[in-house]
Image (cartoon, rainbow, N blue to C red; front, top):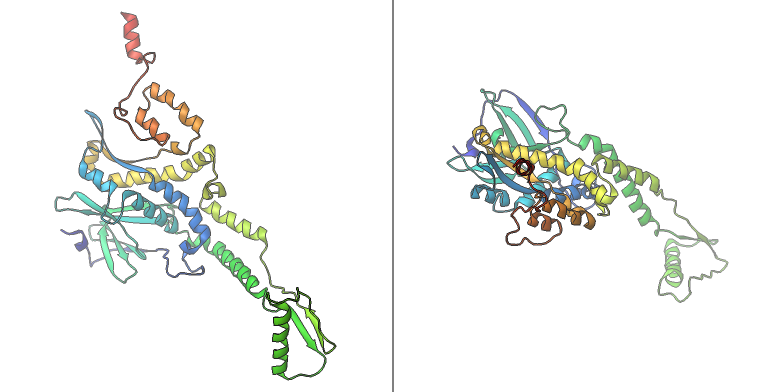
Length: 388
């Protein structure tokens, strides 16, 4: 049966979750469009890019040992989940949706033999959890074009964070960010207004004799052309006769305090568990390791668990099949740390090609073979030799 035909008319229960959507462009206004904020987008981008760099692999561990990507169709699925994007792009999109909504969804498309063949992200506006008479869970997605689709939860890769009150969905960040986004919007508008109004009226000409409105306008225009124009040769010096008095008017628009702006920005950064060093790529080795362990590694574990339990049946998982997302952060290590890893190659903990990858070097032929120095023999072998 086609996956799109799994729509049920009889609902036993329903839970609705409103997604944060991005509708509108131009100047950012707080109306749920989180992604229009430069602050929010700068917080999201480093994590999404890092998640996109995770390498998905099919691992099979059984009595014959460990095999990496033993099934070609699964390797192709992880590398190219659908005709429109690579695995990296899919992972970045899911990470972005997760941070914007507290939830991210992708549907697994299967062939007539029930093998997964494609994975598509689901950009839904609203998601509804529904159950049939057998208490099986389905998710009903409402899209921006007004259409809707219902999928079995067994075919949905569902990522979530801030998992609290709802039994199915993670908490949306909208409630927590509403007040902060209003402050950002108000301060941004205040700055724009102050800049625009700063050049409206700078001088006031007071004439002691009554004049007609058109004459006042003509005199003001003449004063502007003679003394305020950049092409004027008066060098900024103005002269008026006794008929008029010139007076400078200082604009008094409110410009938000820089300390208020900085504190609001820091609160948003703290909400996303990031900092300026990560956003501006100024982190050192220790700073990146802290961010990696706090943000990237937990999501990599969730990705591995969700892909494994949705792609494989319980029987297949019983035979040692699983999907892992390699979480190597050695690319951000210092050169001295990378060079010190050669000791791991000597001890057989890393292959030469794995070590070369940390240095940004291409693999070499035979570099996947594990090597070991002669003075680092296996413990059991050493004991056996001594006993002889």
